[in-house]
Length: 128
Image (cartoon, rainbow, N blue to C red; front, top):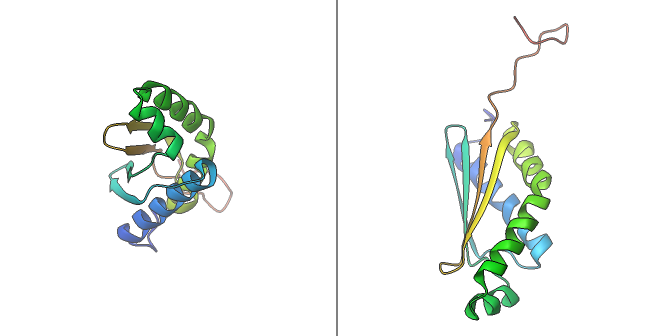
């Protein structure tokens, strides 16, 4: 992760970016978000994530439908989530997973980062 920003600043920037993507595409973002940076993993936990329509469907026993639509959407937007993380931490995610809990009104975005980018020598090649 970048040396110029603290872990707390990186976590806050990631939370803001993920909430922004949710707000932009769902018309509503989560009311709470906290990001955890653990080795090569990033976990963003969001609360109060469902729209009024989704909450109505969940209340009517249609949580599986909400999960299916959300999962399909999240993976459709995969590149946008991965690019947002790369722009903040300077590393690409090699894995992205998204999950919701209808009863708890919580969503999790998980990213597993690639190894550190190789150092580039003056001739434009990786050393070794």
